[in-house]
Amino acid sequence: MDFFIEDGILMGIPKKKFHITMDVVIQLYESRLEVCNGKEYPTLIFIDSVEYVNKELRDFHENVSSVVGATAWAFVTPEKISQILINLYLSAMKIPVPTKYFSNKEEALKWLEKFK
Image (cartoon, rainbow, N blue to C red; front, side):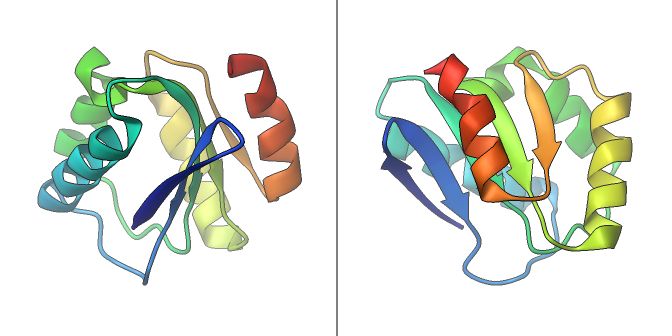
């Protein structure tokens, strides 16, 4: 996933579809922190595909340290199955920053504005 900052929002765009494992999540976390360089940003993540999220990954995302560098999370995906899985995932989670799913980028960016 490529991370970059645009108009005060951290963007995460996948280079390709990938299976989400704990190793992948840790690599993404480290990449995100490097781009943030000690600052906090509202974060927009584009998701092409969600295959499976196990308990270890859910526990990691509920941990306060997993959101270091983020003031809020917005997830965007065009795929219906991913939308369903993300909604289930978010409803079961206790993520320590505001987190919301969107079907389009414009709505997500509008929502993230208040977390700059």
